[in-house]
Length: 318
Image (tube, rainbow, N blue to C red; front, side, top):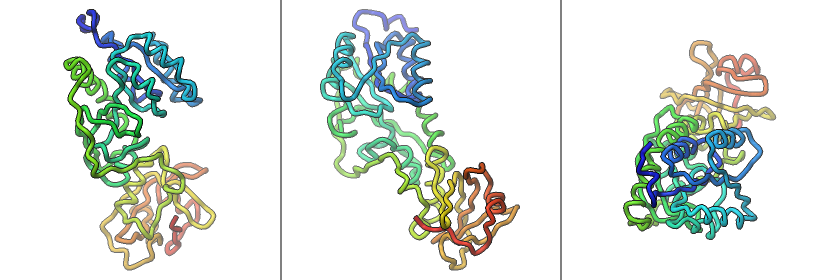
């Protein structure tokens, strides 16, 4: 532990998060003596229960925020005398009174090269749309969704086999160092750093994917885009395959540079133990590697055998 963090005037940070993603950064700040409290919004799921348990075991002060009744949380943050608020993986936009409660305001850590992919699920859409590079953006929080001026940005890579969980894991591991840079930069400027307005060009949204966006559209999507969509949704969202009244989740697929012989997109071309289940796309061929339904998780060949699929049958477009 750095003894300097306990000197008078050491930076005091309030962290806003309700996700295990932020835990490494929170524990890092706590170990340095810089963490004043964690503001969280309770929700009834296993991840939040584990997150809160980890905070409790570490002896970290927890401040619940009820989005429709923020006054108590605002008063508590002010009473702590916090210098800085950091936001990461927090599901609610902060009211102005809470954004300005820390002396230096609040800064949001967002995993995209803003202004691109503003919103709740940027990593999903970055993977789905085939990007291989992006940047973490740290911005001052303001009323608009991810519209604040930029403090700093750091690049990261997206591998060809990365899933959403893989990127989230790497982000969690990188957060302590990124948070350290933010705290040092703000401390060095007395909370008045040089900020850069976001470029007005290239703004886009990254909402939570809804069921109507998860179906494979064989008519419109080429093989590579389907494969990217599938790994983006593995395992949280999946990608939906439909044939008549049946619907299953596709969890892994591979785009193949093979001839589709002009077959209608979505048509099953071959079912073979050695080469798997292959389906024609608008530009080539897609191999269905891992499929899940109520009966279990199957490779493509075994899924076809289990469900009675045959060559020339056709999957529906969404």
